[in-house]
Amino acid sequence: MKALFTFFLFIILLGNLKTSACSVVYYVDPQTGNIYIANNEDYWYDTKAYIQIMPKGNSQYARLWYGWDNFAQGGINEKGLFFDGAVTPEQDIPEGYQKPKGNLGDRILANCASVEEALNFLEAEKIALNNAHIMFGDAQENAVVVEWVEKEKQLIWIKENRLVMTNFLLSDTTKGNYPCHRYTAIEKQIDTLKGSEVSPSFLKVSNVLGPAAQIPKPDASGKI
Image (cartoon, rainbow, N blue to C red; front, side, top):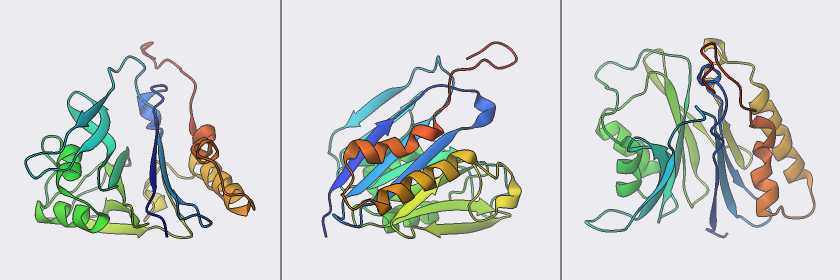
């Protein structure tokens, strides 16, 4: 089984903030064992986004992340640990837990090598999110989405070689933002990949997010 990790960074800074249109995919090609991860980040068009590359040092892993205002929205490190987040309907977090402070994503990538270590990191620091969920994936074909719903932590693990996350809570779709046409479209695209007799190319895997992209549009104030 190959531990090849291909990271496709697909950022589209488009759309309306209210749509919260982030889409994230972790996919394992059943024929080759290759792992592909991809995301679509829809946000304000004038956001000054950038890619940050941090070298290895001081017992920290080398890492790459993208984001803005010194905050990692998603990224990957030298060990193949990947993370990304997406906004969800607000929920109450468990008692004794707190919202993260500082650049949580960078700290996780700097110190964790696997999904298990990332989950342990969150637990050790008693971190929970009240308005978002997080996907972690690693080079051992492990992937999970972490959610906090009605004061309970929920873990949704990879099934059938794929894990998809948009902006509804996978563990409780009644909380809002569901059904999601982007989630459905991505799942259909992945089914097409798996049904092919030919192992997919990098481009074909990355294109599963094509139906999730949005065109630029202004909000009520005219901001794009």
